[in-house]
Image (cartoon, rainbow, N blue to C red):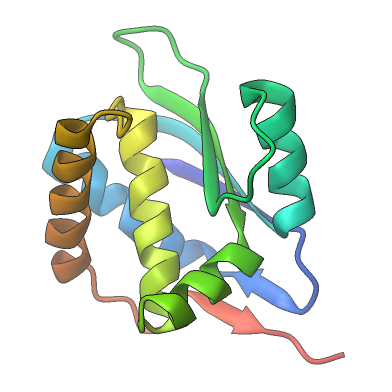
Length: 149
């Protein structure tokens, strides 16, 4: 079982801890890995763009960035940043629900923390297959809450 911390840094949006933790735990069990701590930051395009430029020297918009902090052989510890703006846009573009797109982004980031890459076509295909496999295993009713002002 992993310790999941969530920092909601997006206006009127709250990522819910129990459902998020169940997604990460499902992947950990299936991949036979241990997570010690995962922090997820729900933010907007400006924050992820700054991180992308600072750490990857790439001035683009992205839906997620993952940072892995553990040494090889240790339980996985990392941070996941997700852009609610990109997830909304991708949901419209790919004709998915917002929740389905949010689950896919969490799955994608979790797979990166485990060590999967998606730079090469074969790697990307493998990650997409894993994401789809896990998407069909995950049944969360409520992953987020929209807050009223």
